[in-house]
Each structure stands twice: as C-alpha cells, then as structure tokens.
Image (cartoon, rainbow, N blue to C red; front, side, top):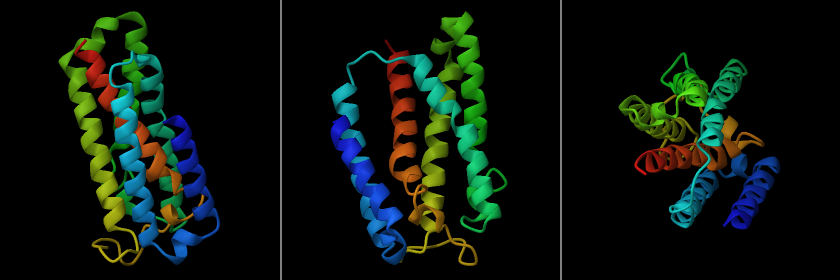
Length: 184
C-alpha cells in the first residue's frame, strides 16, 4: 500500500510540476478521488495495527506550519482568503491543540482517553472536511462556487497539489487512528 501511495504521490507531483492540472483542472479532482480511495484502502490495512500516538500528534502539529504557508499563498494571490485562518480555515487551532496534547501526553498518558481529546479529533475531522470542500468549491473547476475574484489555483501547481491529495488524507487518517486507538 505504501508503494502505491508513493507511486500516486510521484504521479500527482509530476502532473502538477508539468502544469497538467493547471491546463486541465478537472484532472485534479480525479487525482483527489484516487488519493481518497487509496487512503481508505490503507486504513483498512492498518486498522488493527498499533499506532504511534506521539508520531500522529506530531503530524497534526504540522498543521501550524501548513497554515503559515497557506497564508503566504493568499498573500501571493494563489488562494482566496477564505482558505486561511483569516477566513474559514481553523486548522491552526487544531495544530496548536495537537501540540498541547503532545506535551501533556508525555507526562500524563491518560489525557489521550479524555473526552476532550476525542472532541478535538472530531473537530479536526470536521475542520479538514470543511476546508477541503471550501478548497474544491474555490478552485477553477466547473463546480466552483466561491472566490471567483481569487480562485484556489495553488493546488493546481507543484508542490501544493500534494496538500489536498497527500497531506490532508494523512491528517484525516491520523485523526481516525487516534480515535480508534483511544477506544482500545
């Protein structure tokens, strides 16, 4: 499965680097669907495996850095403001709380069984789904609904095409695994 993910990443990266997604934006939606299906298959494969909670929390903490880059893309007029923390993207809050949970869990593992931790995971999933939908509906594709004055064109270019096709599914999968691990 990881080999397939590596192949998909290479294909998406190459297509975005060559400008194929920019020339044919609907192909990007197909890449996104392919990535989602592959991640569902990966989840089914690792569903019973033990997870490294610390690693998953570090992955979630990276959302802070990603939000900084999204804001820079907004300043460069490559994404609309609605996709940043100044708009409707609350991932920076999820990333900050991830770091807080990471630090607390180093001293008190019981925090990971707390209802607040579960609520944070559900909020993280909702935040991801929300920003993905905003990103899709802000992209220059036939179903565009938002941001006609400043569409989401960054995801059509390398390396930003990897954000919704690779990074977001990994973040979603890590939330699902953290919730699953909490129930054990």
